[in-house]
Amino acid sequence: MGAHQTLHETTERSKVADRQLPMTQKTDQAFYDRADAHISLANQQIDKPEDLGKVSASMTFGATRFNAWVTSRSFKSGTEMAEAREEIVKYFCEQYRMMLEDNLDEHIQNFDRYKVDSKD
Image: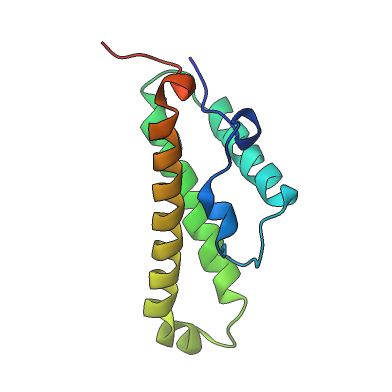
């Protein structure tokens, strides 16, 4: 079963590197190293094609759970956090959409080079 490429395995970096990222002001090599570590772990969990969606869902759930925890650390109370809930959701949804769009564009532009498995 082919695995998704890590950022180091691609020749182009996503445009998202030039934009403000969650919890950071600039993208550095450590950002890509952390992303590669998550992608590598996800790849290790894929034993068969049917696992792709399950692994993706788990990775997304883990990211949202971690982001909720990180966000909670900047509030003094649950009430205060609840008041900012809509803004928090909007921020993370915008960030996810931006990153997804940039990565989709990159995979569209490099489809034949990145494609590992084929479906007839």
